[in-house]
Image (cartoon, rainbow, N blue to C red; front, top):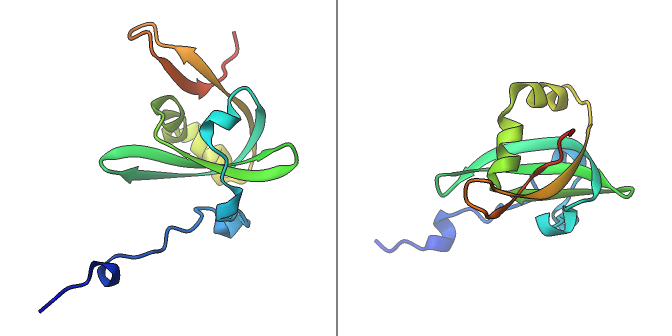
Length: 116
């Protein structure tokens, strides 16, 4: 018997927020989001190659967009039960993605802006 990989694997890599009307062409790269005010309207946690990730659905400048990331500073936010509850109940969250320098490694990472 000969197997054909294209018939064994799904090609369904559609947008994660089709139920919210967010389509694949509404993707925004994470680097383009930095320092811009957004309103988060949805999230979907996922795992790929044993690495936690999150899809984030958001509004920016009157447009609806989404992003996919494995950035630990962002992923951990959506593993927080309070954040999940707010979004799961349909309430939006205002936010801004920023870059910070790690005090441990000196490397730059992305996270949500916090009150000083």
